[in-house]
Image (spheres, rainbow, N blue to C red):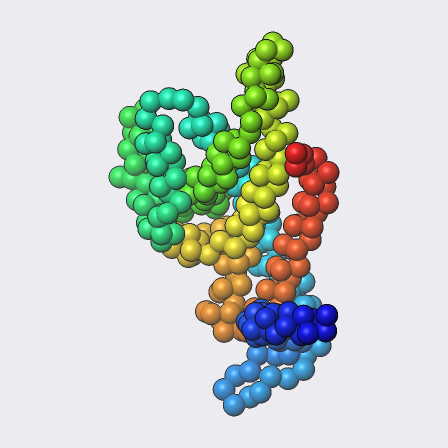
Length: 289
């Protein structure tokens, strides 16, 4: 028995070492860095206590980025999940061109993020972009969706929904195909219509997939950098500055690594609390069988 235990620990040791070196170690160093100042040249880091956290609380850009991120998450999460479910239901049935539709829905997912941003920049171009060309057909004037503070965040959110819905569709499609057809046929024999079958049979069996997709959607909503960097740069007037993009600015443009570590710690805590809340409240309504 002792020999088996030692063998098991020996087999786990390489993976454990990699986990400590590349995961737990960096996490610990990041948390410790929040209590020090940023080193500059020959000036070493000095212990600062909770000064970085006090700076964060008094930072108006942080609070604006947090508000932007909450609004962005509130827009993109239900929209991308709902659209993914609709697309999965559409391509799960028997129809001509089903394979082409599946490919069309999934294509935005495999496109590089920067390429997607550039495509939509062309769509949003004032005057000659695709959107303004369509508006011109109805006699409407040009608009600058990315250059106006009241519309820029919604324009970026639309791009994220377009790109993420196809990815989430794959999980819903796999879950739909795993539902036994005998359950649906039994519901039909009982006189249930299509809406009743969806509400009473299909949707309860999709709740595990919905929980999984929801957790991934929340993480994606709080880690967006590429689209913001390419499309708006956080503007106009920080209207599209999200938490992860602001973290990138602080850490790699302003080179304030201590404050960036503080933002990272707070962001991880927020995501952890949201994920735990999702499992605690949503898991009660999940039907695993």
